[in-house]
Image 1 (cartoon, rainbow, N blue to C red):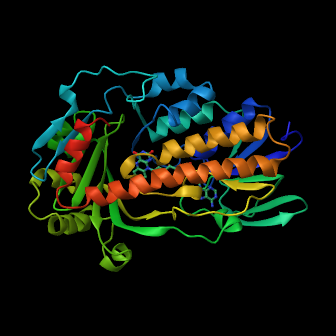
Image 2: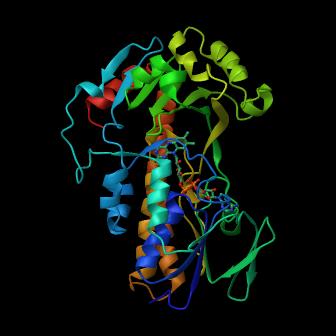
Image 3: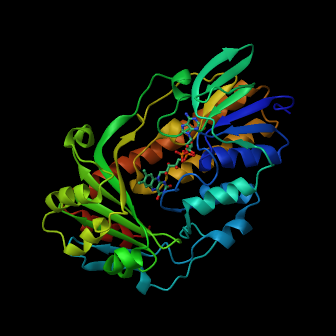
Length: 387
Ligand SMILES: Cc1cc2nc3c(=O)[nH]c(=O)nc-3n(C[C@H](O)[C@H](O)[C@H](O)COP(=O)(O)OP(=O)(O)OC[C@H]3O[C@@H](n4cnc5c(N)ncnc54)[C@H](O)[C@@H]3O)c2cc1C
């Protein structure tokens, strides 16, 4: 097989990198994942994710992890309420009986990021993930690569895979193409113990999700299994807004002052999101990779997930694309279909770029539609026509 006697380094232990590590280990490959987090518990993992049958769930099926997923996903967390700015519910999936299930394209079960990461980590051979390895530099060494980390540690690899997300350190080795600003900036936050800190919103969310759309602005709220609510606002603004605003996003009071102004006329219920000083916020301008991006395939280097095809979150495809990349890359490298690693990478990248481009185009259209007048009617009609 192509990977015999090859040491593979995956930089980034997100859903894409960990899925790839699992799939490659199933094929007997020698894999190490280098992750910047200091250990598996150090970082609060973000919100909840719906996995799609043809991508995220397909990868878990191939990885032999679907039964484990069924133990950890959150039934009912995919139920959505659509509201206007007054929190008037115009579409309520809680009122619809759940008829779809695993194996059906319409079934998109939700799992929190933390449990998804745990599930993948638990599936790997001991020692696969090396924590506290924040990549600082990569240099060619012989026919492979030398990696240097911020803490001074080094490592070598025959094949290097960048699964290091939106600000990938590895991507510039392959291409100078940079993402473009989508026009929307989000403010993302978490309300801990929402039953206590945001009781009305906690009840409105009912263990599922809320999409509130009005005034060309969006607010997405999701319940998590640990009793918190995660949320993100979406506003059309300039790329430098967060930097220039002077807002200290770690201060709930400062973010609340901004929210009151920016979302003026919205019901007071939404302000519960910022009522507790324990609410943590961060601003994130949303970027998208150019739809026509391309680069020549290298013999020992490639990308997956956000590092390859960052896009805004409005079609819920980022994690699903990252996990499908892992499935397709592992298949290309391990199937015996290709004469050398470069041919396998070339085939994977060509297909991956095309697939991601189609999804990114849909995502950008969705991002625009959700932040335009009439967004609520648009989304109601979209749901009426099927997800
Ligand atoms: C607010 C928001 C909501 C979203 N909602 C959804 C959704 O509902 N559904 C969906 O499918 N997608 C969603 N996404 C997108 C999704 O989170 C990403 O597409 C997905 O996490 C990409 O997976 P990945 O493995 O490629 O990268 P990441 O999840 O970003 O993982 C990258 C990993 O690499 C590590 N890393 C980064 N740099 C280095 C370095 N230099 N050295 C070592 N390690 C490094 C990071 O610590 C991280 O563990 C959302 C994104 C945002 C911002």
